[in-house]
Length: 143
Image (cartoon, rainbow, N blue to C red; front, top):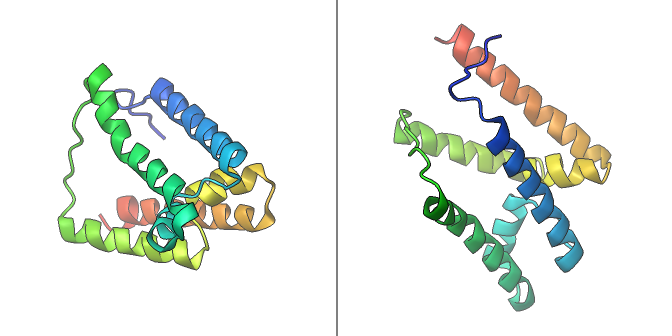
């Protein structure tokens, strides 16, 4: 295995992880809910009045964060070389997987594992294994 040192970002990765952990803890302490993005989005689309406010605020914060970062730093714009059709199909498959697995990586991988949920452990191991296999197939067998 070779590390691409020009794209290795341990400090920003650490900051992102700490921020996610802090957000998950705050959401649990202040609202009594676990941080699972797919569940938050689904709930915002189907929520009753009392649930909609915090969900919409959370999602607006997710959308506003990159713009706030641009005010204090000059991040490199991402280069997307994948065709839009492939990105769309991939996104739909991820959405299907979150429905099938009753949650997403943030819900199971961050909050579920921290609560020692056996179901979240199985889900996290499953999607991590599927990711490893997919990367291996795409990089070594298909190309």
